[in-house]
Image (cartoon, rainbow, N blue to C red; front, side):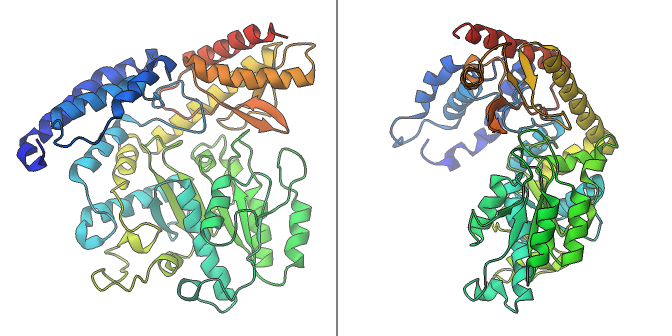
Amino acid sequence: MSDPLNEQDLAGTALGMVATTAQSYLAGLPGRLVHDPATTGVLDELGGDLPEHGEGTLKSIEQLTHIATTAGTHSSGPRFFHFVVGGATPAAQAADWLTSLVDQASGVWPASPFASHAETVALRWLKDLFGLPSSYGGVLTPSATFANLTGLACARFWWAEKHGVDVTVDGLASLPRMPVLSSGYVHPSSRKALQLLGHGRDTVEVFARDASGAIDLPALRERLASLDGPAVIIGNAGEVNAGDFDPIEELADLAERHGAWLHIDGAFGLFAGVSPRTSHLVRGVERADSVAADGHKWLNVPYESGFAFVRTPELLGRAFGGWNAPYLPAPDETRISYNNLGPESSRRARALPIWATLRAYGRQGARAMVERHLDLALHLGRLVDQAPDMELLAPVQLCVVCFRCRPPGMAEQDVEKLNQRLGEELLADGRVFAGTTLYRGMTALRPAIVNWRTTETDIDLFFSVVQELGRRLSKSW
């Protein structure tokens, strides 16, 4: 049992065990608690000392399957509204299993022309889906954080070149601070990308007109006019607390007027362009210099999946290529080695679930899913509006609904404490899953509806659970 070579004939049997479990697990998702605190003791089965000889493939997989399906958070189910997390469509999930089965080294063309070509096609289809010019370069990444890193790395190269420096070769030491400007909607992932790129997490200059973080365009315009050199603007398509958008078209006008780089963080909001009902929210994104988004949010492909697009394709290679390693191929326009175009070198073939879900459901399937979620968010917004003990804190624009429990006559400080407790109780209850945030200084729930399985029945249950818990907790005051 100590050597996998002795169990090579069991690989198919082990996969079959998981597939058999998948049938009942997926069928039972709608009836499961999203998270059952009573199962946390099962996690102890993961521990113990490192086995000296091992228990063998089948026993280990049987044990891990039991732990995962029992104690795991069932975030692929229809009632997980915490963060912004999609599920995995049937096609994407099957393709993800296939990704592990064939285990392609997708970063270098000679290692897998198949994986490289699949990525090229997936990127082309994504640009078509989002209305981005086909001339844009692109690369798949593990997340929107990595996609923001990729776009902002290209911005850094462009900005340094304006100062006569090849930052890939010489670094930042001789350069001034790069001006990075945004609204109050700027996401921590953009800040983290700047931190990793050596610019500092807190160097973003924020221009917000109020506590919501909405952009102060006159102040941003004035700041751009005051700068002696080029700047980077981060526009935000889909703010996480209420789903609001920066005015992308106006940011594109400012970027063109002042010679700035416009980067759009569209982690989930880029999908607004899939529906004519919401495409106005991302009007102008096709003028951006770089665009970032997630696949494991609204595209509903498994973690880890993101994508970055850049108006000037060669900047990807200049920012990330030039490995100076003789065993790696030189950059090529047709036989693409994607490790030259992004921050990773070792990469799994994450294009396969994207290709599969786009092939399986097409443009109209993506639109139908987005519009169903738009309708569900509006339905939840109406339920909140009609309830005397609930308060909608922001208009419902996309898939996020920002609201709080506010019993009539309750003092504001008690409303705050109530909603903090409500967030804790909601996660502990497990029937539905959503967390709290701070919006305009108020503790609020902000469920995000992006899972392909979610229906109106799930939304009704979510709201009834929130009301039930809120009314029980409010009796303490």
